Image (tube, rainbow, N blue to C red; front, side, top):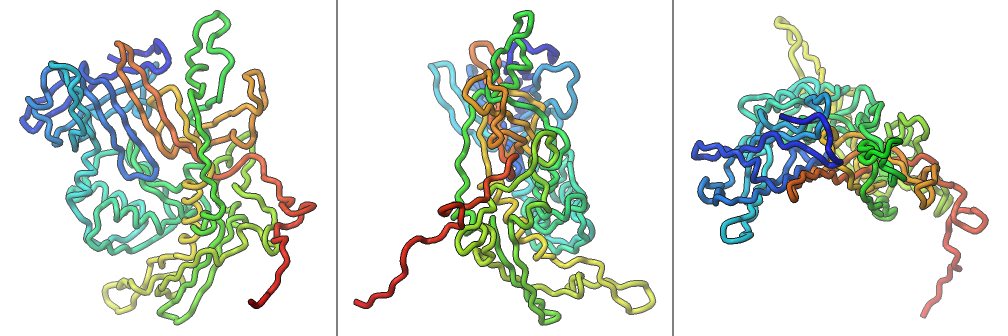
Length: 481
C-alpha cells in the first residue's frame, strides 16, 4: 500500500515488480530489486529502461531469463492524491524484457543481474509493416495505426494535437513508427500558427502526437527549480521537503551553439526550389530565422516576468547583413504536382451517377514545413541546453515545461536572477533513477532541458570598430609570382 507522507527527499514506493517467464511462472522480485532506470525522450518513439536485481536464488538461470519475459512495474512518489499522471504504472500496459544485459557475481551465492526492457509496441513495430492508403486528418490516421489489431494494437493513452491538414497517404511497406514519423513531418498545427513541428514520442503516461510549439505554449509549468536554496528548514526548524525538492542538485550548461555549424544545417536561413510537374512552373521561397521568429511559439511565450527573444543577435555582420540573411546557406529542391493547393495525384468520384471528379486532398505543402521545421527542430539540438540533476518525482515527464531560476550572483542571498540562464525550459530527455541502497530508497531525475529563446535580447550594436558591422580589416592585393 502506497504511503501519502514523504519521509525524506527522494523517497518512493515500489508497489509492484513482477516478472513472468515463458515457463508460465511469475516471480515477485520487489525485494530483489537494487535499481530501476527509465528513459524518456521527445525524440524517441518509445521508452526504454533497465532493472537490476540482486539474485540470491539463481533466478536468472532457474527461471530462466532469456529476454522474452513480461515485467509488471508500479512506482510512485508518496502523495496525498495520486492520479494516473503522478504514478508510473505498468501493471496493465506491461513492459517486456528484451535482453539480459549482464550477470555479475557478487559472491558465491549472490549475482547482480541487469535486464533491459521496453514496451510491447516496440516488439510489434519490429514485427509488422504498414502497406495501406489512409485518408483524412493526420491525427485520425495516427490513431488507426496505433489501435489497429493487426498493427501496434496499443491500449495506451494518446495525447494529440489537431492538425490543419487533410491528406491521403500511401504508406509503402513501412514499420508503424516510421510511418507515423513520416506523417508527422508534413503536419501543420491548426492552433499554433500552422507550426510544422509535430513529433511522436512516448512517456510513462502514454503517447504524444504534438507540435513542439504546442509543448512550448503550455500555459503553466510542471515545477519551479532554483539553482541553490539558502535553507531547507521551516520556521519551526523542521526539514522543508518542498523547498529541498525545488533545489537543483547539480547542473551543467551545454555549449552547443555553433554558429558555423548552425549556418550549414539551415537553422538560421535556407531556400527551396519547387518544380511543379503539372503546371511546369517553378516556385522559390526563402526562410529567415529572425524574420520568422514571431510566427513560432517559444519557451517564454507564457512567462509572467519574461519576454521571448531570438537565440542570436540581430547585429549586422559581413556585408552589412544579419546572421540569418544568407538563404544560400542550404538549398532544397523538390518536385510536386499541384492543382492550386490540391494534390493532383489523387482524385475521388463525386456522386454515383456522373463522372465528375473532385480532389479534396492537400498537396505536400513542402514550402510551408521543410525549412521552418528543420530550423525549429535543430534549435532543440543546438540551441540552449542544460543538464540537471534534481530530487526525483514521478509526476513529471518528457515534454513538460520547468521554470528554472539562476541567481545573478554567486551567493544564496542574491535575490536577482540571471536573465540569460533563467526561464522556462522544456524537458527533452528524462532519466528516472530509482536506487535501493542500505535499506533506503532514493529517487533522482536527470534532465536534458532546452529552450529556444532568451528573456532579454542580445545586443545588436555590432562587433566592428565603433559598433559597425563586422568586416575583414585586411587589404586586398593581386600579385603575380
